[in-house]
Amino acid sequence: MGLKWVDSLNIAIELDETYPDVDPRTLNFVDLRDWVIKLDEFDDDPHHSGEKILEAIQAAWIEERE
Image 1 (cartoon, rainbow, N blue to C red):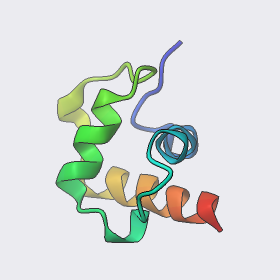
Image 2: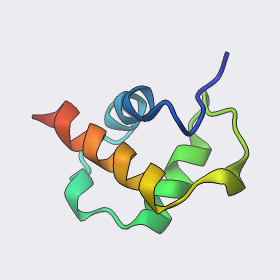
Image 3: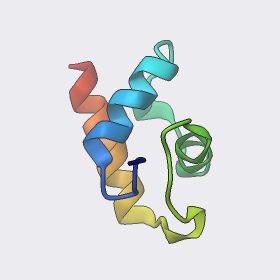
């Protein structure tokens, strides 16, 4: 079973492992969306993301780093 947009914590963990040198606080939502879609485990409609979903993923990623 792949990652869905609602799996913000698991997506954040995958992003942290895939992009360890990136500061998630400086990432824009366009790049964040593209990076999520490129994750091997991602299995959802790319068009179903929105600002709230991306904010949740970014916040989870920042929390994962701390």
